[in-house]
Image 1 (spheres, rainbow, N blue to C red):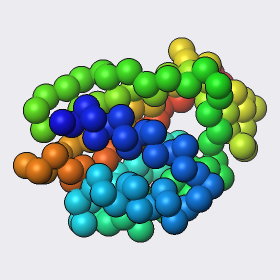
Image 2: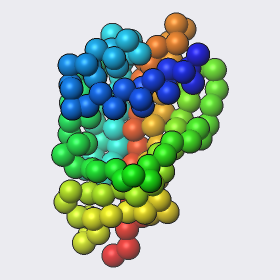
Image 3: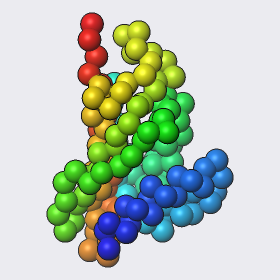
Image 4: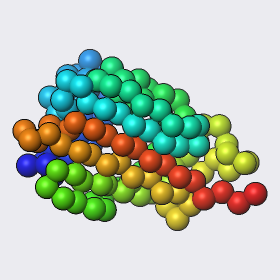
Length: 134
């Protein structure tokens, strides 16, 4: 069940830029009070609810751009949690230490999903670490 939820979660991104359809589809997969936690080079953020999630997606769209080589792989799994590693080239709209494109071996991007007893996403933690040389 949870793997199907994760599949749908990522497939829903194809609905963009139709934000209304995207929000409606993601709402079906998340609890009303889903907790959104993000860690990246811009800092740590925590929010609650669908609107917090949508704002994170909008913010990341202004910061990051994925490439055609993007792919997901299950990294770690238990009955109530799945961690997915996002692989492929990641581009920053504003370079970090002079670097705008980070190949798969130059970043670690994971998304950890926690589920309630009904299989809905109760927490999403996004962690993105860049391997930058000074």
